[in-house]
Image 1 (cartoon, rainbow, N blue to C red):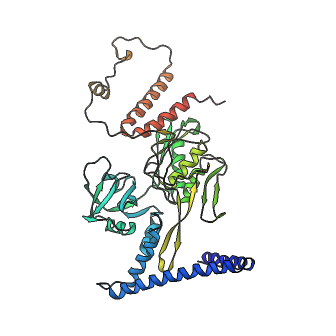
Image 2: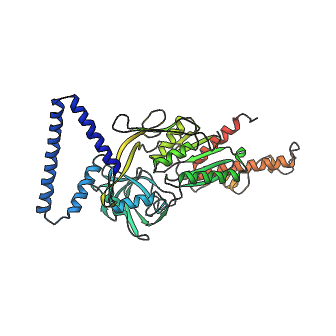
Image 3: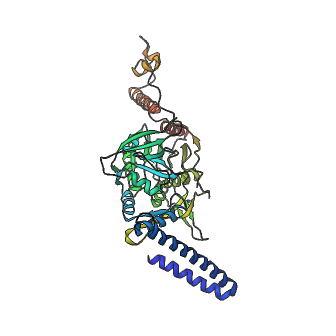
Length: 448
């Protein structure tokens, strides 16, 4: 609050200086503007009183004021809004990684609720909700015409209770209902795994656990592979990551950049922007990085993708991201409420805004639909271990050019290649990213 007061005083002082230098016209212009504002506020007061006194049913004064404030904010853009004390507390809890709900990040588009992304391992994801789905009804009640916060309120409820949402999906001929059981959402910000010699880090959200989780999972994977010298590269999976805290996006980007700009923000007033730069130190020590994105990658995810792409530190693979290039500031208000206000746009290091455009991948790779259950005879034979090769023939002579240790290493390499091949059926985009890492490693010059 002190900061807001000081800003107001500064503006008043600037006005005094200007009026001493430029005489009557400026004073007259400001007087006209003030008069217009007061007339509009009088109009608002008239309408407010008429509703209170003449509406067919008695209406709470608090509800009217809250609706007016929220309407004013939501008319600006889809991301500005009023947060009641409960909503504000829910937001603070979510940034700490645990809360109750369905596990979907949503926005509003054309009057309906649009899913930005389902969160990993949540009831919504398990029920098959997908990025890009439109929610038209909640328990049979239409969300058309509701502001975003009211629609979200409809989806809230006790943990363990059932909710029926009606979904419209591109490619589906008719809307369909999905039953979801509300649950406690425990977000693990970063999950790590090792595929062959490639480290895969799946970042699901940018909360206050993300950077520490990334460092921890990366160190565990490096240790599993026996040191960084045995690591081929890293896949950063940001698919269906709806974003979160700006500071965490900056520190995650910084983890893989030695220098240069990460992101800049520009507000309404000239000179009001900020620029964030990387500090020395690359956790991957220059090893190749491939980043996976899709239409569910938004906001903070796009900051990381844009920074690493512009610095040519990572190859971005997948499909175009969501395109949220604005910054929201949370401003606490009286009675523990808050206002979420869009105050700036952000720009990638090359100076591009991705607002409503998104990050375009360096290599576009669509995720194909699941393969049909039917298998060809060749596939069945392969799955059963009946691959035909020279070595499978009766009486084939042995290879005499390899020692036993060399044969063991060769077999281990083959096993890793087969594991990567199996991954294509499970997650084609991830397998594609790992193949890029493998290819880059194969042609990399030998280290002295």
